[in-house]
Length: 113
Ligand SMILES: [Zn+2]
Image (cartoon, rainbow, N blue to C red):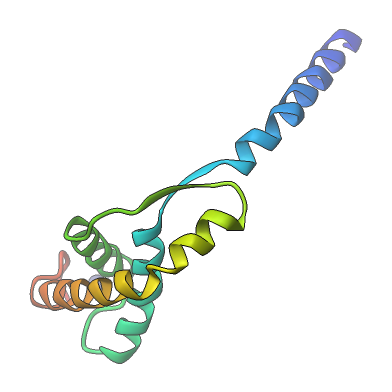
């Protein structure tokens, strides 16, 4: 039992020592971040569109398939703030695609009722 506890403790130590790298570096799609944000804004103004999880995800999927991805690896705030310079440009395209996608889902929701 003592040995078992010891090995668990070792695993914990290994995970902790690797933790910095895992948490500090992450792959993101900036377009996806903007899409999520814009989706809430658009849907709050277009109450006629179904607001359920399925329809929200459908709208996101359609919009993201029509938008160029903006991948970045996040370390700290630096890369993110550089990307903020293109925020308005991306946002304009995202708003257009979200509205188009929401009209599509409104006409043909993937569920009944
Ligand atoms: Zn729905």
